[in-house]
Length: 386
Ligand SMILES: *Cc1c(COP(=O)(O)O)cnc(C)c1O
Image (cartoon, rainbow, N blue to C red; front, top):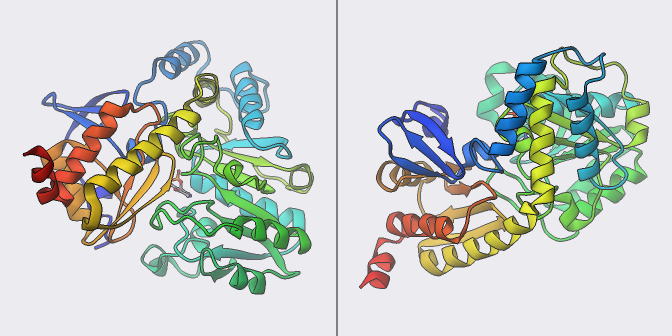
């Protein structure tokens, strides 16, 4: 089947509880969660600020629909919008990353009056009919075709091909500022700037899918802030509620004005927005994005020193790290989990992805490096130990 058997299939480890960067199995073994459970726990598992906010909210008011103003939603809204680049002034909460992208594509069509979407090779935007249409991998798409949407794919990172693809019919260009699932691909300098210029000239919407890159992981709250490019629509989910199911879409005024009618029953529910507010406030107040930048540099340096020629490349930004292996990533992920109590994720056939909680310290980073050394470069490891 797919190369995701190991991550989406059943892992033979029953998880009982989580604490910071660790997951504990039913037999009491501690695992370093270097996948942060798909980047969903930037503050680590069961962070007290989030747990307290959620517990307090679920007891007071579990749900009321979004037509009623509720403090937790207003707090989350203000914190989310304030965390995004200037120019993104309104937001909408949903339930997942897929749903955030689905909304983004709808908003772009309605605000521009156009319908064509330009997306990138190796992109992953989700699995509903519209988001899936903008996703690259055939194995995800083929059985479900025809999908919704007129999508043109261009090679990720190629400014010339992007320039050739964007025209007056383009409703949106949708890009991950760094591709996650597609293999932790960092675009060349100037690529996102080019996407910005092209969409502006064509009156199209620039959509940045920050479902995986967002929430401080790359050293800024949002990866687009690292390059100073502000999209028209920014989508996110995964870490937004530190494990609670919630997505968000932040937009410029011209998108909000032309967004048309779109909503969802659970949009901005009190419990998930309590989690959003607690997560964003803690990340910002305690400056975890800056910590992620420093720890990312440290981790990448140690990985390069330890793995050396045994891997093709270590790449990424902050604590969004991809290791291009010389062999299959699934086997390496399995070995790390079963024999070294480290949980990492494959991103494609030969790339191992590390997305640890932003709160890891040097000791935990060293634990990751040691485990990887033992699995990927066992001889190098033996030499340093003797
Ligand atoms: C995970 C992911 C999605 C889909 O998010 P879900 O919450 O699983 O629907 C979309 N885009 C990117 C970049 C992702 O990493």
